[in-house]
Amino acid sequence: MAFFLGLLTALGFGAGDFFGGLASRRIPALVVACYSQILATIALLVIALPLAGLPGTQALLWGGASGLALALGLLAYYHGLAEGSMGLVAAVTGVISALVPLLVGLVMGEQPGPLALAGIAAIVVAIGMISGGSRKASPRRLDEPVRGLMALARGEHPVRGLVDATIAGVCFGLVFVFLNEAEAGSPLWPVVATSAVGALALLVVMLIRRPQTGMSRSTLVLLSLAGLFQAAATVAFVVAVRMGLLSIIAVAGALSPAPTALMARFFQAERMSWVQLTGFVFALGGIVLIVLGGPG
Image 1 (cartoon, one colour):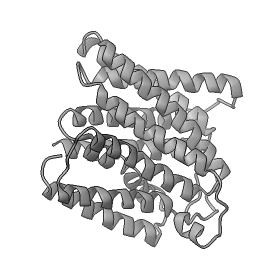
Image 2: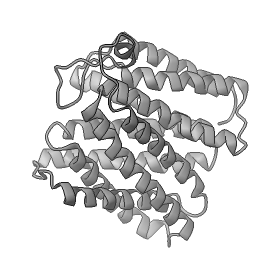
Image 3: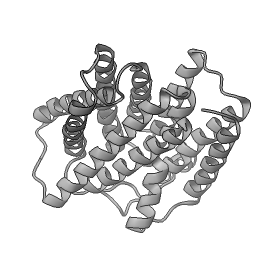
Image 4: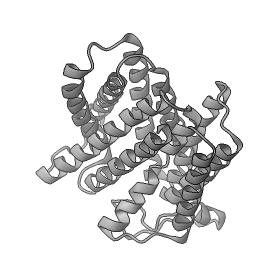
């Protein structure tokens, strides 16, 4: 059940990234990130206030730390996408975001079985292949191909944005780690704190940079969907890590590039590269190994 919730985490984050990506074709990515977090916070508060009781200190502190890590990760990630090879930045960010909670879980004494460890390794490889092997450069420049790690190996892209990608990956991984520490009380309050603090931090950056914020009603719908899916994914993760191992659940949750790629394929008719298709094979194999390896 816990591992299944981890996969739902990936599905929620992946769907949120898809709708956020569509919105970023129309307005700046910083505005997308900030407004989606604000809308998610409002929706979560409406649910949490009547149902979750009063928030505990632990939930607010760890949720707030998670929100700061989320905001910093988003800023570093978008800067890396703008500065370097987008496929490479996405791949490095995705892999590191999975490795950080995995290593923290192992250091904390978690002991996945041999099959589960093999499945984790396969999923980490899949994350890099799926996120770094896209034929599309970004929502802003659809005609520019990205070949990610393969392009780097052939020397086609300068190694730029890797520092940002590393920072983003570590920060996104810490989001999982910090939420894992919020063990007491309702799972809603850590998520509320994550969204609220993340939105506040991004809003401060927006006030400094002053990007264009005008948008249509359809764009607002996309932002709402992005925020709600991301919030639901975070709730699923908090519930999952209370039932299973951080080292397994966080890696499953980091598989979010897979549903994003699938939604882009079915709803936007984007083609998948052979690297991405191979990554899906690794992902499916990893999932099977973790399921066979026992509870996660």
